[in-house]
Image (cartoon, rainbow, N blue to C red):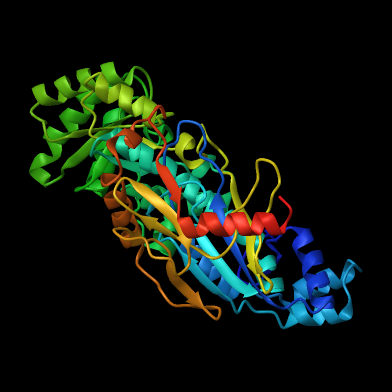
Length: 445
């Protein structure tokens, strides 16, 4: 039987030391309220912003976070846990509160994407799951947003499923790419689970299965008379364009409309120009040109800068794996417990104490203490879960729209691809600075 992560075993999506720490907390009665911040320490190279994503999946996972009888039996068999702790896990549910920056919002290092407040063992046990869910989708949504910027208003489609790092990654990459601006995905399950528009053309194997390229185009177009996209580079791209145009003219009296042709190899800029000319001369100016094949934001920008008449793009491997920045330094750190604010002083990994709110002002953000006002700015974190139950749910399209609006409101210098712009400023409030000083002094730092 194939092993899948499901609601029945999501609680074991955790590093083993979370379980051993939880046993220590439970054994010593450390059930006091604790607050953890989930944030990114620093941006990957070439990045100047991130797009928050993964929140809805994270909250759904927290609501489902249970240790099944099978999970408890497995842990018992490891002989590392007491009977009392196994009983605790058998009855476990997450009862905490969560505040978060909404999906689709542009965010920056040190800002809490998520703030979890719960009894210490609960807050600890969900760490790995939250980091995985928020970190991965934020990474992919950020990459997709860059692709969207490069497309300059043209549609792009997530083609990454076959190259992503596992089936769940492909599903979540489709979701995050849609938030970041993808118009659709080739991943059919994402259409079912998330309501994302699905899109597809044809493979070279389909054309090769026919003796004549024209017959392949003709049959396909008749089956999909309103939205057929024909792959024309199986043999000779320019000949394929002529054949597609001829088939379009032949089938027009039947009410068949060929929406676009697809280029997947070769000199995409040069071929797009010649194909456009062939289609126009054949009386088919409305047939669009769609391009794919190892594309990313830099390649798309190069094509459009060269004047390639391409109307849309399929972007796969390099987006779904965030090839140039395939990991994100997202962390989950204790900032307050029942004794008060706490901070970490490790070199290069210092944290900021206390419960915090991030505020967006004009051209900069402010990280402040909870309850501290920042005039002229708006708060970014809001309550999304109370006592383990989701309090805010929104359609995925709302996150997608928020992403577009958020990007439109960023300083223009942050929207380039090379990463040479001045970093976006995240200031610390006077109250937070004072708390840092007091906490550091109390630790002898």
